[in-house]
Length: 204
Ligand SMILES: [Fe+2]
Image (cartoon, rainbow, N blue to C red; front, top):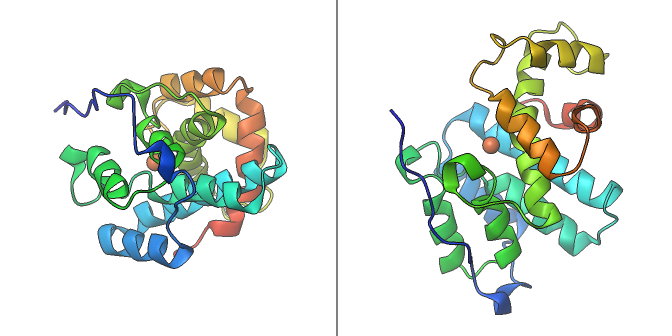
């Protein structure tokens, strides 16, 4: 059944809150409190890690910004486990109530433009969208390899990507749309995930 998840707005949070973020402890507390499904929690830890690494290595952002990127990744699906019909409205409301930086809230609001009706604009927005589904597909691939992430090659991942029956819930169309909007090659993002995601591959 198709749920209507459209947010029908384009402004999130309050510009004067841009310096306000959750602490790492607060973020993990919220994650553990809201998300009981371990696989989903792992997915968010993985996307958070990818976001931080990209912010540091490719965007050369400072620690404070790296944490905002990671926070967006850590919380982007926080409401999916218990309140799928309120995804991602509920986590946005929660962050607005806590007066979290609008850049973080907006990245979460735009991580699925086809579902939420909000287009990614900032680099943080674009990369969360670019990593989300592809991270899941890469993890699914790691689970069927004896060595997991060790020795994983771009060629093998690309083969799975082209195989529509593999991780069939991952929309290839959305993945390609995301890479286009981030102005990156699919291969570049895949390679980045392959080389970084293995660091966060087991349940915490
Ligand atoms: Fe996600």
